[in-house]
Amino acid sequence: MTGPLKGIRVLDLTRVLAGPYATMLLSDLGAEVIKIEQPGVGDEARNFGPFKNDFSLYFMSVNRGKKSLPLNLKAPQGVEIFLKLVKQSDILVENFRPGAMKKLGLDYESLKADHPSLIYAACSGFGQTGPYAQRRAYDMIIQGMGGIISITGEPGRPPVRVGTSISDLTAAMFTTIGILSALHHRHQTGEGQFVDVAMLDSMVAILENAIVRYFATNEPPQPLGSRHPAITPFEAFESADGHIIIAIGNDALWAKFCEHVNHPEFITDERFRTNALRTANHEQLFPIIAGIMCQRTTEMWIEALDAIGVPCGPINTIDKVVNHPQVLAREMIVKVEHEITGSVEVPGIPIKLSKTPGRIDAPAPSLGEHTMEILTELLGMAEEEVNLLKAEGVV
Image 1 (tube, rainbow, N blue to C red):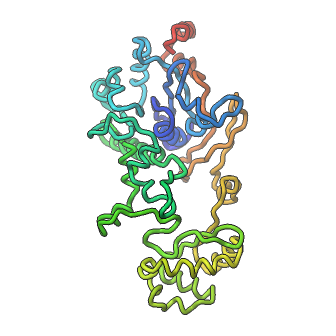
Image 2: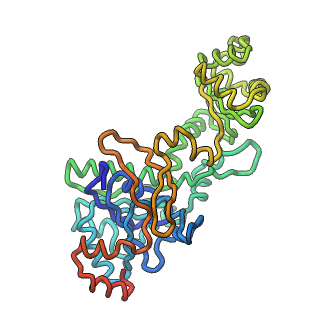
Image 3: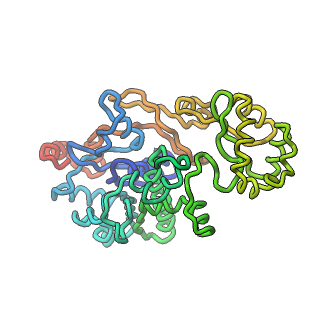
């Protein structure tokens, strides 16, 4: 393992998306991640498509670089093995509903007395406290409850889900931030601690502009399509062959744009002179700009506006994203080799570190792939003992 977290061991009891994405980030940065799974079944995400040679690429996309150890935590021998692993680990991450680990006697309060340096992170739908703590949560539900769907989509149209599982992924990133913060504290004091992250909290945290707009106006923000709520023009327009996004974030850029499209009169027009005026008069401005932008192709606009320093860009489909020269130059598409799937492309690491870069050098594990390695090398068990535990369904 390489990376800034080399030497850190993580016990990963997470499944599906939010938790696995958090532990994947830790793995990408060099931590050894031991994924604890249910014997014979594994993480339920192993059953989610798409598949390649009957192996889930959904599972592959968020579990790369981890080691798989099936372990029955309802069996006394399974608990015994787990506690031995806790003793040799730095971080435990789980995303069960609050109380599930307590029923097993493996919650933070039960473990911290014997493992005071343990960092225990729990990522759940609603957090460990509050009246909704025990409710079940999925990304779509949290997107709705957290308000992001209410400001997504076109005005007057039915509700639209954000096109990625944003509440899961946001919670995963906040969980990772919490874990790294706790690691820093432990480095200074030797103390571990409990990290509590909720998907709903995470959604509220990223509603920066929407929340302040509500408190400023006492009016709930509504969907605006591709338009920015406070900067104008800052949205997608139809071009001659598709769409073009322009992002004119200040009055100097507005002047450059107006000069370029041969409408210098708009620079001093009292309706559009400042960003605040342009935003207030969006209904009048939009059709004017739309009539201009449809006269050239997307590529022609990008070349022309880029030359004068006006931010702009296309709306790329995913096939264009994964082949984009900037994406490839930043190593954001990486190939991994798996014994079942063969070569698979996965997203790269977005965190670029100059001294201790992370790397992706292993695929997601097959269920139980590392059982023998972990139990013999880490816990010193004999192969015969491990084989017996397998036969008994403990591992």
